[in-house]
Picture 1 (cartoon, one colour):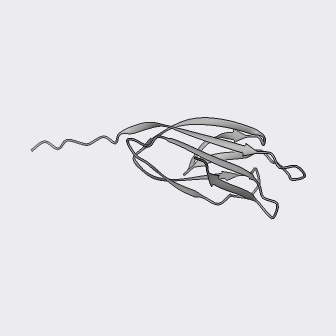
Picture 2: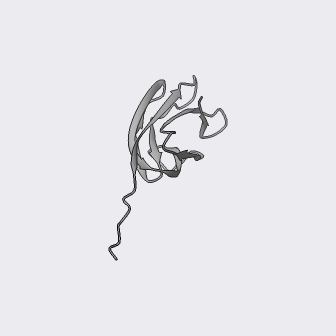
Picture 3: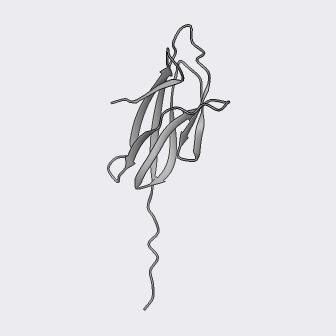
Length: 103
């Protein structure tokens, strides 16, 4: 019997990040990641959209600065009918970055 390899289906996923500027904080540029994939680099006070090919499943969205800091991670699920995700972030007044899901 011939085995048919099921190829994973990749979807074009759009991820939008709104990086709010907070006065009197570092507002450092952040590197934007999904899992091990670097989507790009973003400055405070900007909203950028990134497109990445992902298969169905669960992923983690997070930010890293140019040093050792990594933000908290937000889990999200890619489904055939769920291909657009929006996140927000800003420099925390305490430490690091606040990061959240935007509707």
